Length: 509
Image 1 (tube, rainbow, N blue to C red):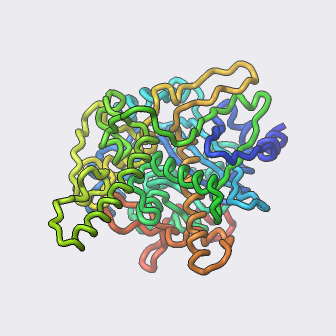
Image 2 (cartoon, helix red, strand yellow):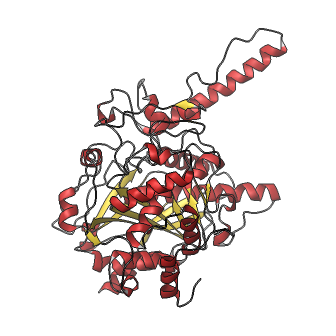
């Protein structure tokens, strides 16, 4: 039965070539974990790359996460990972479909509700945010998949059906790992499902380089330093990439375009699926004033009480109009200069999204009830109050920037009927899907750009050559250079990691 389900999930698919589609997110909990295990393992093993996202119970002192010293930041992250927990884990497996004209992927998305079986801290602001956006704590405590953190003293990491064994399957799959602003995610994954975090950052990066030998990619770094988008929080980056991809697809332009296909889930399997609507980016009628803070960072201290618009579609379209207006303005200025006219002050800061203004001070009330909770936004993973270039304020938590109140609320299904599509976004699984889409789009652009430079057809590189300029580069808020995931001459792998590699592969890899 379990093998049949695995084959059914992988085998039944339907092409979604339009820009508007619905993403099926499989809801995995303790009651159906064993039943869905074969499908998840097959998805990991057959994927071209795997995107991951987490929802966390908190991160502790926000300022420590933005310490000037990256080593001090790592110590703060370690403290958070050891004392807090992962509430849910999302992963999206993108499998390249051969014999397709475009970059087509079969995508399977899973959202796992987890429950740490030991004491951990959950921060009040995290509860406030998660409950506000539909996270079901009753379901988590009643039906979350249990796990223990740190080192597993037995060899059970590699056998049985449990979350640590699933993480082992992820390692065994040897696929590119994709995250968005992923340093904190990787630390929590390591501490929760692998081993106790090493004390030194260099040891941690050495371990990661061997755990994921094909490479780690951070779409936050990709959008900031490669695509150079106006803003780079997850939902904005996804909406912008999806819009650009759709325009290129419908215009019939040459070059690769991302197309996604999803499995069809019939019978009782449909009761495990949340359907997430991904409509076209569209502006609303009439004039709507946009919240500048949310526009820049994907977060607003007023939360749902803000009187201004947090509509990411409007923000993307407004940024495009602003960019065009600035282009025309610069052209007029050049013409004036040629004519000898005096040019009035035209500061680029005027009306510009705040995250593009260097050295801007962000003042966030850390103890406010409206403060972002753990995993509220990718922008909240790394900062709260800082003066920095490339600042992406409240980078403290993960990927839930502008959800509707009802976007994450669950519907109880007692019959094998499909749930209605959800109009909201956000949940670890859907955030993983968005992360993967950004990567797929960036990869397509990278291939096209290289082909134009070489005056040839876009080549299909090996997996380890995907976006080579971004390989193993993890975004660091407020820093002009990324964290490089590499084992240097002066660093050693941790003892726990070496033991696990020996158990996992039989020999050290």
